[in-house]
Structure formats: structure tokens, C-alpha cells
Image (cartoon, rainbow, N blue to C red):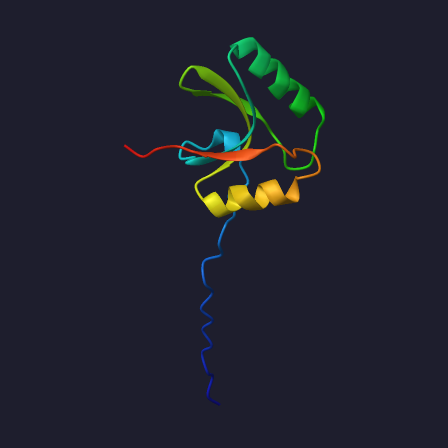
Length: 103
């Protein structure tokens, strides 16, 4: 009797990054909910948004020049931010994309 050896090659699975976007260091595009001249106002608004516990929405305050903006999403891909805005238009009708300038 002859035994055939069967070898199955399994591609390495793509592991999706499940960290919240706010933990990423390479964000190039942000979905902005609002901008404020005072840091405490931006932080208060970010807290109110986080307290709403909307699915997939985590906010943080980012500095843009002399303004403090509340970002509700961020990504390395502009298209992902645009899709986020479409998906959350009911909750955040005034949201817009801010892209970081590359040096």
C-alpha cells in the first residue's frame, strides 16, 4: 500500500485591527463634530458624545492650530471617514472631514 502525503497550505489570516481608532498613531483624516476656542468646551462635548454610547463612536479632542476640535472618528483612509459620515448622518449631520497635512 502506498500512502499519499497531503499538504494543505493555509494562507495567514488577515487579522483585523480591533483597537479603537483613538489608539492609533498614524491617523491622517478625522471626522470632526465641532471646533471650539476653549479646550474645556471641546472636552465637555467629547464627554457628552461618549456618554451617548453610540455604536462605533468614540470621541476625543484634537488640537488644530488655536482651536480644539472634537473628532468622532479617524482613519488613515479618507474613504473610511467619508463612509463614517454617511453611516452616522442622522446622529451627526454637521460632521466633516479634516485631513492632516503631510510634512
